[in-house]
Length: 132
Image (tube, rainbow, N blue to C red; front, side, top):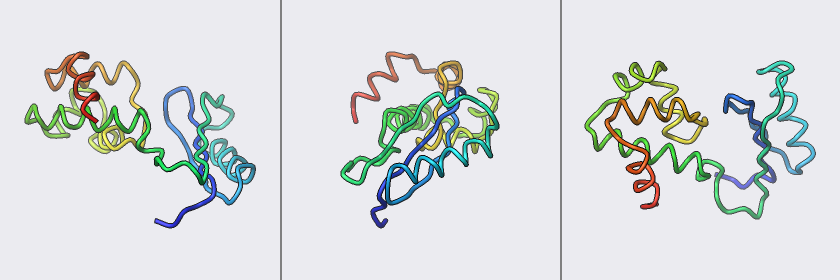
């Protein structure tokens, strides 16, 4: 993947985000703000994350990416597929996939439902996250 200058992610209060890339932070921010308004209207921006060219860690390797991968490993280790787990959580398999792949943040209520659906606990999750 070619190196872009800056990537800006803007999150709403529900943990959903839009992102934009540009050669400088100002342009990336302006593009992200326009996308944010298109997708979420006048909703408040809850968080802004900027990935600079010198940052070597992709945004998907962030906390939410690690959390999602850990939840996925726990689900797979419990021998559960996405469809029944997503149904138990009250979401779609595609949304579960987004959480597991770090493409969308999972809120604490959904994470709790997911843990219950796979028979895991918060200490199990913490232990799994510490293996990364």
